[in-house]
Length: 152
Image (cartoon, rainbow, N blue to C red):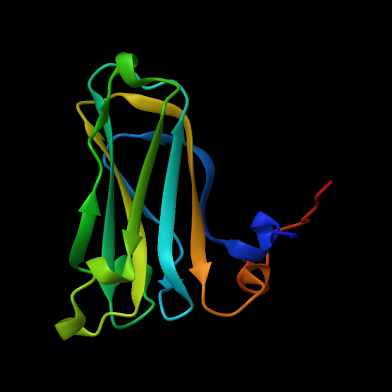
């Protein structure tokens, strides 16, 4: 029995493009429509983190797709902090079951906060995957910036 390719099951639905950062920076991923996906997976990768610098990822939900205006936290990562956490990754996911049904929140977004006392992060980036797509193939919901999809 043939199984689906992962690009039929998962979609790239949000990003923070690789960038350098100084402290006191806050950036947001694209908002993910959780009516289309049962899960959203947020993966952060970091290069060199200088001493006294932190990076925290928090997932927020809301009824609207305005990423920077979402206020209800669904999940928060542990902080990546200082040179000991250089060249690491963070995986944080949210399931529609984790979102408060009474609030009728449909969208989720990631907020990356760079903090500390004057350090930098050489480069970091975020990729957001939508999983368990309700309407196949999931690649129909990829960001328009996804350049190509291939398989063997």
